[in-house]
Structures are given as C-alpha cells and as structure tokens.
Length: 248
Image (cartoon, rainbow, N blue to C red; front, side, top):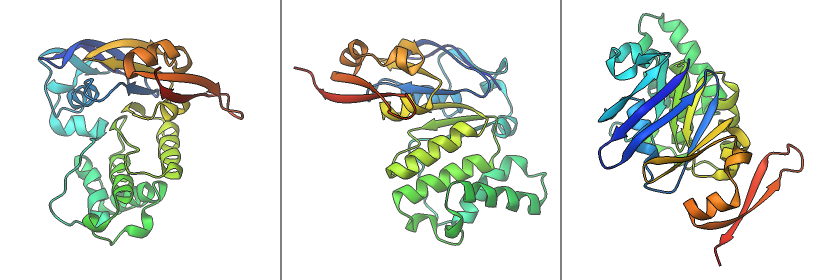
C-alpha cells in the first residue's frame, strides 16, 4: 500500500510537506528535536488532523476513512504510549486484533503468539505490562502493532529504550516484514543502514530527500544537526556509517 503525504501543513509547525512511501518501502524521517517529525506522523495515524493538505493511502484520504477500516490497514507506534491499567502482555498485544474482531479467537491467539515470538517477548505473556523495563515495553508495543497485521506501519522512535542488539533486531524485522513503513529515527547510522529513502525535516519543512548515502553528507549534517560528520563504509555491508564530533 502506497502512502502519500500531499501538501500537509499544521499551523505553526508543518509547512506544505510532500513525501511518498512506495508500497513495501522503508522510509525514514530524520531531523533535530522539534523539527516536526512526530507531528507529521500524528497526522498520518489520525491522532491529529492537518490544517492543510491530505494523507492518502492508495489514493484514499486517511482522515475520511472509517476509524476501524483505517485501523485494519494502518498501525502506529507513537513515541509515548501511556498505560494506566496493568494489563498483561498478552492482553496488550491482543489489543492489536480489535480492528479484526470478526476473526476467530483461535486465529487471534495464533497471530498474537507469532507477533510476540518475532519480537522476543513470548516468555512475558502473563507478566504485567507496567512491571516491564522500558525496552521490554517497547518490544511488546511493537508486537501489538505487528499483531494488527497492517499494510502500513508508522513508527515514532521505535528503538527508544532498546539495547543495540534489540535495535538491530527490531529494525531488521520491520524491514523484512514487507509492509510499507514510515519511521522517525534519531540514530542516523541505524537510519542509513535500514532505510531505502530518507526525508530530512528542519523547522517543519523537508530540506533534503533521497537514498541515505546521497542525503547524509557532511555539509547537510553540519547545517541541519550542527555537527561535523565523517562518512565511512561498513566493512561488510558497505552501508554508510557516520562518525561525529563537534563543529570547530
């Protein structure tokens, strides 16, 4: 499923943003804190309605869709996911099946179990969500999104609280899932290694876009992020990697 962000604006925050995520692609949003990445993602997963422009899934305006119909094709992992009640891990992941409540209970359990196994939280099934570590909570929430079986996945800092092994596991899992992915990422090296395309957001505007090796060059990183970057190549994969220090 193709995702199009067509001239999306939010008063005082976003200014006429245009971007496309082709079906099955993994596209990253990068930019400094406060640049508008989370606001844009909120417009995509219907937490916020843009003041101008439209978000379209295969041509259909996502904000004109029935809420349940939208949830059947689009899942989101916001940056902050508050929980006031201590549901078990199984119950939290099971919430991903709510848009598909016409499915059989047995089928739902199998889908949830597979999602928990893929994210390495199957052994936590009966644990209370509030008692988990930050990294465990993040993996449970990713399992919930996968259990939703979306065609489009929107992720806001999905590697928050994760150790490096789980960061790599989660992004590889998402990349190999075959769904259309739009993710805001702070770690530029993870973005370079896993994303097909990057959009650089600064002050609510897209200032660069393209493959990571074309976008993440020292001049742009100095201008947008205020750092001095030294590009190198991963010795095995050849992926762009960056070393940073302060600007002189």
